Structures are given as C-alpha cells and as structure tokens.
Length: 113
Length: 115
Image 1: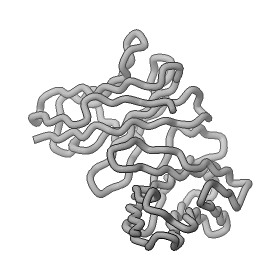
Image 2: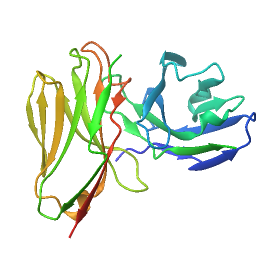
Image 3: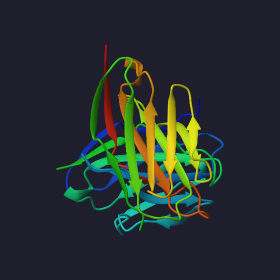
C-alpha cells in the first residue's frame, strides 16, 4: 500500500543545534502532518500543512519549530535550537484530502543530548 | 480539549482467546473514531474507521463497539493469533465538522498473543 518514508530512523543531536527531520509523503497526497510521541506517552498532534501553509498547530509546536515542503519535495520539520525536551519519536503522516485515510511513517527517534 | 484514555497498556492472551482493548473519550461531540495497529518496526496501519452513527462495526477477526452514552470505544479481537501481536492505538477526531487531520490518540496497548 501507500507508504510514507521518514529519514533518518534515528538521530542524535547536541542540545542547541538545529535538526531537520525529513518525510517523503505518499506521492499524490496534499495534506501533511507531524505528530510527537515522548517515550511511554501517547502520540500528540503537532501541526498540519496544506498548500504551502500551516493550517493548524498545537501548543506543542513551539516557536523553535518550523515546517515546509519546498517544491513538492520532502516535507520537513526543523527544530532550531533543539532542547532536551524535544527528545521523542516524530511521526510524519499524509493524506489526499482532509477527510481521507491518513497514512503514517515509521517515525524518527530524535535524541537530544 | 478532547482527552482519550486507553486501557490496558499491556495485554497478554493465549492463542484462540479474545482480547479486548478499551478507550474512553471526553468530548461528546467527537464523531470519527479509529483503531490503528503497529507491528514492530512498521508504521501505523489503519484497522477500522468508525462513525458515531454506527455502534457495531465488524472487521476481519475483530469487532469495534462504540458506546456513545458512556463515551467508550472498544476493539475486540476474537480468536487472537500470534500475528495479532502488536501495539494498538485508538484515535479520535474531536468534532463532527472537523477533518481527520487532528487526531487525539490513546496511549496504546501492547498485545502479546502466545501460542
């Protein structure tokens, strides 16, 4: 079936540095999402993105976070600067429309040290 | 906002037995409900999408029940087999006019089916 690919699967970064998480969504999808899951806790919505713009974001989507999808390439989540509490698994997802099935990637485990 | 509580966090059953996972939610206006399965090393796979208008939904080897009065959603795996071993997540889309694009997830249940 359709696959959302996330690269890399695990990333370790020094606190204060910038990190970019990459997501290759399903090819004809138009809506894109990031979710965050801290170890042992539930997955939480961060942001959704459509037509080059953030549509909705949660309070977890701090000012240090940004998303973009330049020229239809990877959908990225950038954190600058990173903090220890940003350590989590970040899941990317995409859907064709806002009310169609959402497909998730396997997640990127981010460890901030 | 919407809160979703999922129980149990861990569940071990014997092959052939049933396994029941339950989620309770707080927003009475929630309209769409989902169950996802995540096998080790794999991404979330949609098992079933449930609308609030339907109380009983049957899939292949499982049944999803929605009790709107009690705000409870349950996944009942009938005659579980080792291939059902995985993490299961419920998710709720908070309001009727919203999209699937802002899901509220339960904490997940790690199911182990032993031969």
